[in-house]
Amino acid sequence: MRMKSFFYGFILLFSIYACAEKNDADGIEGLLYLDGKPVSIEVVDGKIANIKHLSSDLSTPGVYVAPGLIDIQINGYMGVSFGDQNLTIEQMREVTEALWKEGVTSYLPTVTTRDHERLLKSFLLLTMVMDDEEIGNSIPGFHLEGPYISPVKGFRGAHSEKYIRPPDWNEFQQFQKAAQNRIVLITVAPEMEGAIPFIDKCIESGVVVSLGHHNGTPEDIERAVDAGASLSTHLGNGCANMINRHNNPIWPQLSNDGLSVSIIADGSHLTKEEVRTFYKVKGNEQTILVSDAVSLAGLPPGEYIEDGDTLLLTEDVVKFPTEDVLYGAAQPISRCVGNIMKFTQCSLKDAIQMASTNPARLMGLNNLGEIAPGKRADLILFTIEDGEMVIQKTIVAGKVVYSKD
Image 1 (cartoon, one colour):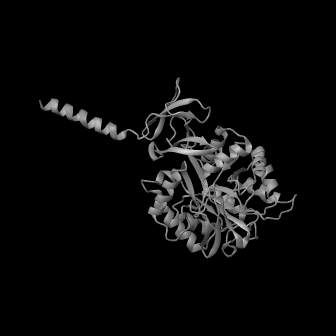
Image 2 (cartoon, helix red, strand yellow):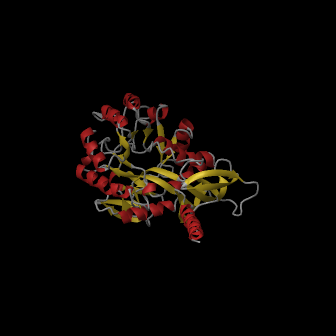
Image 3 (cartoon, rainbow, N blue to C red):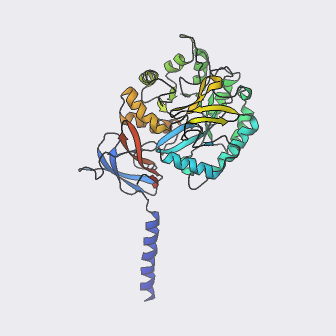
């Protein structure tokens, strides 16, 4: 009798354990973004276990399934700046949950040019988030944009000139220590004194280097690529309003096959003709979509004060009137996905590649950016309405983190 009771008790415990191990998102159905055909995706222990093509139509027509969007350049959202010196885990949870609603399953909190102490504190605060059980899976590292960029008006964009300085490896190592080596991407200007040996050291340490906010010559850019730089940050932006039509930093970056480019396809930072041209040159293999969203993104349009500067938020973009430049984007990366299709007539497959697969490959996130067995189940279900993505459900590591219903 005791043996029988033990046996049934074991079965009960096993059943409870098995149920606990089941994912919230088992049996995901949708039109596969690659070919538009209906599939069912099985998720086990937070990973994609199997993809089955269905012979019949979906019960909910018009819903696509794709890997979650990955934004490698986002400075803040919904009133929260990642450079805020009073940043809290609660704020980061709010931002992450808001981004889940937009289909962003992974992002690199981006910190821009500040003085040494403020940057140090920013990374100390951000590092707290990485181990948070609720949102840690969505933050694979950080992006440092500056302070080692051009101080020249226009090329520096909205970055404060007084904090811009030449690359300093010792200082950067202090930032990395505060970040527990989680700065995985850095934007630098290749013409700055000491930039090339700095890029060398970054590459050796495993940090991806992007060129941005610069006025580098073709020779500067080539040397940077030879040293290991592999990306151009928001090409066409971080650039003076008036440039020489022949000698400017855009052409040598477009023509260099060693550089992929990130672009802000929100319809404001670049004209659709610029987006088309950049896409025609680099193609879907070497183009990465980013939002470059700032803290005011997601808030009502109006005039705001941030760090003592007056900013103008429209429905589409944030302007910095004092410097006569754009301050940042007001739209999430999902808007860029719809726009790139409208502007270039590329396929949904190509648009998702530029917003998910390509950034995952660039950053070495080998478990993300694709729908394939063994990949982490970071997935989005969405419809296309009036040319825009409308997120219906977001899944991170097999767990439903947002549902529109």
